[in-house]
Length: 154
Image 1 (cartoon, rainbow, N blue to C red):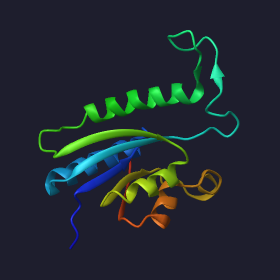
Image 2 (image 1 turned 180 degrees about the vertical axis):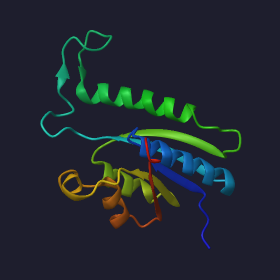
Image 3 (image 1 turned 180 degrees about the horizontal axis):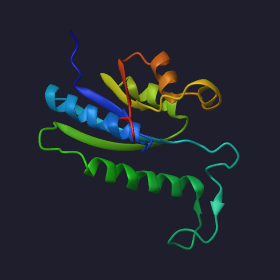
Image 4 (image 1 turned 45 degrees about the vertical axis):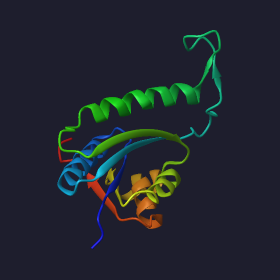
C-alpha cells in the first residue's frame, strides 16, 4: 500500500475547493502528511496577462493584469490556509502559479503522492461549454486524485 506523504490541493476559492482543503487537512492529520495548497492564475481569453494597467499599483510603474491577479491570489491563498487548523499537520505550504490550471496541476502532481481537489459537478450543457479542470486532471494525472463536491446548500 502506498503512503500519501505529500498532498497537493489545487484551489479556485469555490466552496468545493474549500471542502477539498478540509478533506485534505483531515487526511493529512490522520496520515502525517504535508499539504501544498496551490492556486493557478489562468490567462484570460481576450486580454494578455502582461497588459499594463495605468494608475494601478503603488509605485510609479503601472502594474500588469498578471501582477495584480497574482497578488490577489497570494492574499486569498494565505487567508484560506490561515483558516486551517495546523496543530496536528506536519506542514502546510502555499503557492501561486500562472498558466492553464489542468496542465499546471498535472505537472505539479508529479511531486506529490495525492491530489485532492474540488469539483463543481456541472453536467449537460454547462459541462460541455465550461469543461472541467478536475476531469482533465483525473484523466491525465499519474498520481491518485480525490475529487470533492461542496456540501449541498453551499
